[in-house]
Image (cartoon, rainbow, N blue to C red; front, side, top):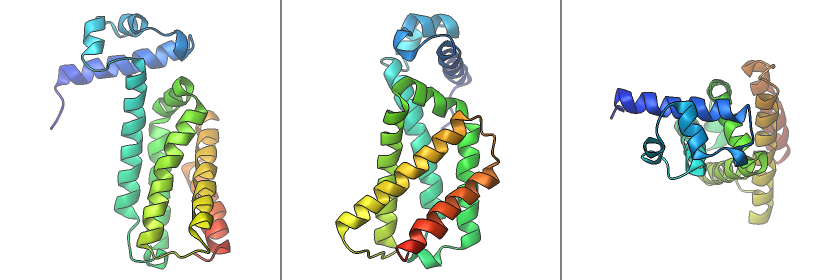
Length: 196
């Protein structure tokens, strides 16, 4: 169901307000009144959408992760990793980087508000779950459950580190270069090393 145009405009005004305020002051020092003034809405209007500024940022985080998970689960399918078409996998990685580039401001708002470590933990947990599901789905059998957990932790934390470095650096490298880095480090690197 499509949102009412007034709702869309209000949410957009709140988005723009938090982005503008974060360029002037720290997240901790931003008040709901600051956001309301910047968005040219009253505090009651803000509270009709969010209970506080943390819920606003969490909504960004949840929306971003939902979009990324949808992209990954929809595009990476099969009964084994070898079933995944290499070109299709590359296209999925490119789409993910394009999504992140298109939503760079929101991702950085999350990182600046909750801290990069908190964003990394949130992202890593979701990606850990994704890799766990896919490793079971693809019948990946490694030395042990402990080894698998550490491997997935290593991969997810490496990915979030790369993504944040790229986003914070202004996305200077093309999405093609970034996709090649992920392919080189993960698919041709870690995955091949452990025999996936």
